Each structure stands twice: as structure tokens, then as C-alpha cells.
Figure 1 (spheres, one colour):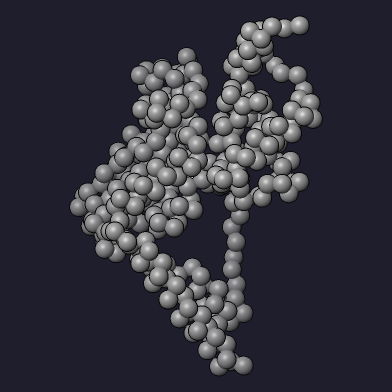
Figure 2: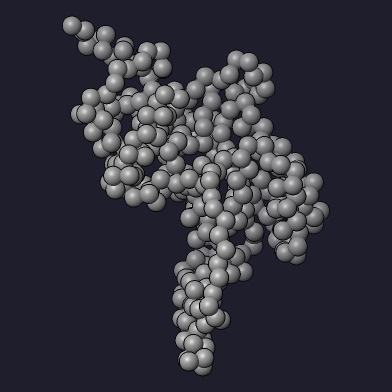
Length: 305
């Protein structure tokens, strides 16, 4: 029989991916499922990768290793939990694959009625700044998209190093707006050898494509060294073969930051750029305008009947 010290060592080695764990029993799978459910119940949506990092916590009764095997285990349980109906599909976010849909309408009345809910008041009309959010992956974008939409901020996932066309298109959109207010860009990306270079290159490219009269401030919101310590984020050893960014001694993926912390950090920074009460005032104005559009749609429908 193994001693308590041996069991602790085994768990540590398992966490590091140095030993393989035997197939889980039904009780162990139920425990892992319960942990995933609890992680998502009060903090959703989250990407599978966010959930995976939460499940690597060695303090959990049923943890997974910080390896591809561990990720696959969490991914498999998330699939089964959603298929069983225990976890709503919307709790797990994924923007990596999206369909392209064409909307059609039977008449103008139906168009206005369906579009009424999309009406947005100009939340930033009286703000001193403009704001955009850029992030390294679609996984991160999946988690923060709802907040960006509510706060009327454009979101740009780069999927690694952004392509020249992608950066140019985004910059041209800003140039065409003729908005000369200072532009604040908040960036979220991995803290690893390539991750700390992506935002540097992105900032440089944006400055090349934006009109010279646009004052841009580029802020790396996450992940940074201080946050790794502050939130005790799980790290991985740097790749020995990658000689870039030698100051990065341990790497952290952006998804390692719990989703609710990332969303709060993002919202706090965005809302600090808005006039006091702007969000609430915009919601009141939107409700009024939407009701007016619904009345217009009803009148149009009556005129054609």
C-alpha cells in the first residue's frame, strides 16, 4: 500500500504529465463532471481551454494533467455534458468555426420588426476616446464578445500574428470614420515567446496604417508578469528550442486567467473611458427607439393588409 507521501508525489507527477493515470472510474468521472458544471454554472460562457486550466488545479478532488491528454479529457467531458443536456451549449464558447448566414424578409414590415432589437444608441457619442479590443485567439474572443457588444466596442481576434490585410482593413475602417478622438486599444494575448511579440508587431503595423492625425494608445491588458503572480496563474516551461524573448522564463496562455476575472478587467478598463451614466442612458434611449420601430412595423403591416 502506498503511503500518503507517495500518493502526493504521484499526484504531482501526474499533474506534470510525467506519469499516465489509469482509466477513471465512474465515480471519478462524476466528480470531474461536477467540477466542470460548478465552474460553468456561475461563470459562463467559457472556452474549453478556460475550463481545462481550472481543472488542472491540484487542490481539486479530480484534477487533470497540464498536457494535451488533460485538455482532451476535459474536452471529451464537455461534449458529453452538453449532449446529455446537463450543460447548455451556450455555456461553452467557441468562435473558431462559424457559419455565414443570409437573412431574407417577406416584406419591409418584417424587416423593421426583426431589426428593431438590433438598434443601438451611440454609447460613445460624448466620450473623449474611442476604444477597440484586440486579442490573440478566437478562443478569447468567444469569452469577451458579449461584453464588447454590450459596451459597443469593436473586437478583433488576430489568430496569432495578424495578417497585413486584416490590420489594414481594421485601420481603414477607423480612418473612414473621420473620428479624430484618441484611440485606446486594449490587447489580450498569451505570455510566451511569440505571444509577447504579437502585440508589439500589431501595434507597429496599426501605426503604419492609421491616419497620422489619430493618436493611438496601445495597452497590453493581459497577460503580463504581475498578473501571473497576482492570480497565481498556471505556467508551462518555455520551449527550449525557441530562442526569442529570452526574458520569458515561464509561459502562460491567456485562457489560464479565469474568464470572470478577464471580463471584469476588460469591463473596468472600457467603462473608465465612458462618461458617467452613459451605459444606462443608452439603454433607456435604445428601449424607446425600439418601441418606436415596432410601432412603425405594425403600421406598415396594417397598410398592406
